[in-house]
Length: 161
Image 1 (cartoon, one colour):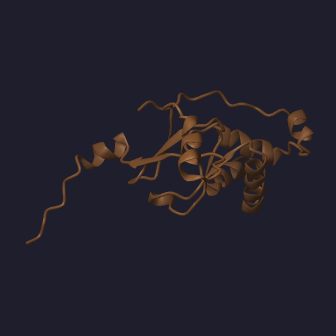
Image 2 (cartoon, one colour; image 1 turned 180 degrees about the horizontal axis):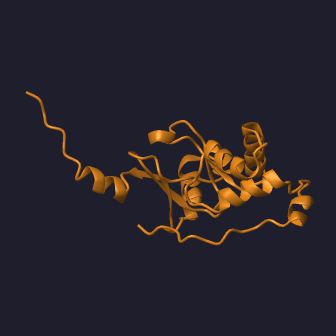
Image 3 (tube, helix red, strand yellow; image 1 turned 120 degrees about the horizontal axis):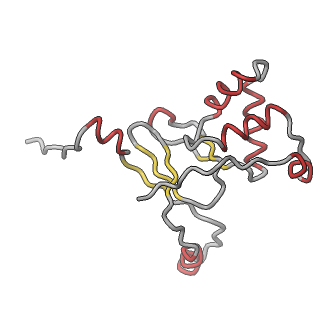
């Protein structure tokens, strides 16, 4: 399992946003820079704490509204709430390419995976089921190497007599 290498932060120029009917405000620019500049798949609260370090008057509501707007425009992806310490909280991904994720069941960390995505899977499943499939998402769950090292090998549950 390879992890996608870190890419440089892709910057949206103001003209690209204007064509979409949006302005590149300072909070929006900073939020986008933070989400695209990390592979942590941050929560809105994580983004808010970092934005506040540079723009002290920004509210959590402003961060949520801008994240929602960036998701709606396809500039950032939203991942549903996961397991671990971030259970139930949406996470955000600045990498909008089609890729899979691994989520650690212990720490809740999400990692991008560089495994190839099978584009024929949608067609095969549509043919088999009769559904009209727009896209799919494959998530892998388990324990990351750091949690494995901390906890040692997982033991099988013993049968009780």
